[in-house]
Amino acid sequence: MQPWTIDDLLCAQRCPRAFYLRARGAGGPRRAAERIPLSLEAARALRGEVFDCTAGEPIPEDAPALWGLHASYEDCVCEADLLVRRENGWELLLDASAYEAREPLVREASFAMRVLDGNGIHVTKVTALLLDQRFVRGEAMDYAAFYHEKDITKRARSFLPKVSDRVAKLNALASLDETPEAVLCENCLRPMECAYWPECTADLPKPNVFDLTGISAAKKLLLYRRGVITFVECLAYGELQHQQQTQILAEILHEPPHVRRAPLEAFLKTLWYPMCFLDFESCQPPVPLFEGMRPFEQMAFQYSLHVVREQGAEPEHREVIVPPGEDPRPALAEGLVRDVPENACVVVYSNGLEKHVIATLAERFPDLRRRLQRMNASMRDLIAPFRSRDYYDRAMNGSCSLKKVLPAVCPDEAEVSYERLDGVQNGHEAMRAYLRAELVDHVDWDETRARLSAYCSVDTLGMVRLVERLEQAVWPNDEGRIPQK
Ligand code: SF4
Image 1 (cartoon, rainbow, N blue to C red):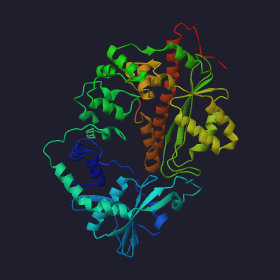
Image 2: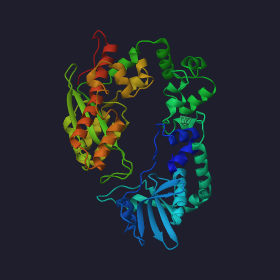
Image 3: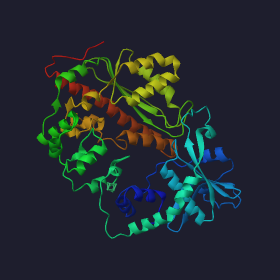
Image 4: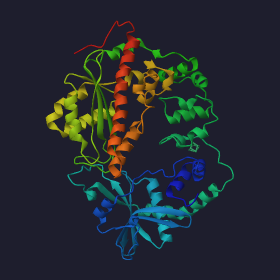
């Protein structure tokens, strides 16, 4: 169980039960990292000569600065991003990976101060390295401009006396004979669902108020506390929108797919052939990787495109996947201009990312700007009829995400099944596969590329099939069609 980390301390603060289960290794993550540690390159750029403590060499007594020091004291361990020797002690620098010094960072600093002090490293100053919102990367990375240094010594010192007490509570909690009771609250659901949620809600009837989509976590908890738990109780309680009512009725009555023909027809009439089904995969690196990028800017590294030139034509597949280490923007911009026919309707699923990426490319490449801007103007969002519940199948479980909609609408089509995919089955896994290839030397890029290609092309071919299904639902006897331009 021990030694405890700052993550254990923060976890226990949010929920004693989650800490207890985590300490017993009951499946939850051991590290709930909210920040990314400072890189050695950045440490050297900020403070000059820095000794790398992760290299396994003995630490020189007169080292002016230490990077990546792991220290333990009594029942705790900490990681210090960067320690810089000062006249009267040490300065501790922590990368906040954020624009402000939030409370968890301050607590981490206090926790580290206690552990370091136990090792004879007396911290007299704590500096939070905050990201500068206005930063735009030039040709080379300028870490001094990227980080904004903020002195948080006073805040870290004020929590320091409480650290020992909190650690004692961790020990007491961990040695309980019985698992603390589950008390459902907002911490269970935000900022993301707790790893122990299925276990803590196992006794609730299924489906229940927490399975409703399109309402906030706060509202679900309010209903739960009022004893409104089953779908029948939710329906009887009232106050729900059309979206939730459709979900509940489909579930209770086991209805076939719910089709609202008039609005679906109106949506289909906003489309035209040739039609391009487009999807990007992207990541959001905190440190901008290429010139002109900002911290956490969404960086696409891949697109898949299926082009259907006329009604009934075979979809043609095009794609660009840029290997790590290469600026993906030129290849993506040139590829789009080459692959998307000039007069095409561009169909995406949940258009936020695609619109943003194309707008950013348009800004960066003035010679391609007009074509790229026209793509954005021709963009139609296929999530709309599923979000509005104009088409709803109970197999969607209340969700309008493509990962739920596609298997629900096309359950028997192997070519658009995510389940058959190897290694990459969603956008998060795609991002991780790409970043892993970027960061780890021995990753087989050809294999990663093949997985990324297979995944993203299911998304775009899946959209082709969804439009076909909507057409069949609205015009079962071929009495209408999407126009050709
Ligand atoms: S689901 Fe809620 S009650 Fe259960 S462990 Fe997580 S935070 Fe605690």
